[in-house]
Length: 275
Ligand SMILES: [Zn+2]
Image (cartoon, rainbow, N blue to C red; front, side, top):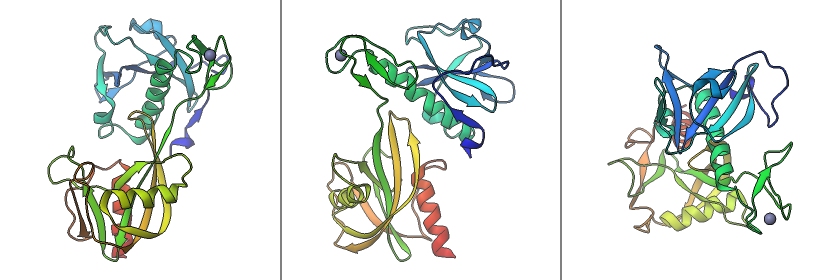
């Protein structure tokens, strides 16, 4: 588990003797290099030593005893060799869970910071809060915290069958769990029941929380559920969902890749049913 070796923080501890690890982002892409054994992120006492142009850096925590920073690299900058950039989504399949998770955290901090350079209340410039992960307006003192968007995602089950759906932007033949953003005033369970009703027209019962996953595209927090089918026939809206169906656990279509919460929820139910 990640938290066995990563300790989040906002203020760097004084006097670390380890060269820091730098998660530098140029837009959505992580700055990496190939160390001969695979792709890795740079490590150095100071980011300046790497000769990569940057605009801001943020301490985000300790990996074992090594300080970790998130860095913003201007979009137009050219990276010096041997560095290159790698799309974070593609990276999910290539690196271990810990590295992906820290990279996701770093990306969200960098992106949130760039998106909140000005106060949303009065328009004046903001500055970093001295101790918290927050931006404070220099004029009206309004404080803005990192934006997180809770999104419910889950599986509707009917004995040995699960309900999966596909959106028009999925790869051909791929089906996944249903998902949608939580609206103000809703509980997570209400949000999941509503989304299922809106997207496929069926109602559910026994909505149970399973697990969650930060999803840094751009700032979602996926909250996973499992629910039992109650009533109604599948009826898709044809816009967000183009096709939905019941699939037997032994005859599943193409499903999302390992590493996604959607896949975890599906695998978990299939295993549970087979036992
Ligand atoms: Zn303000």
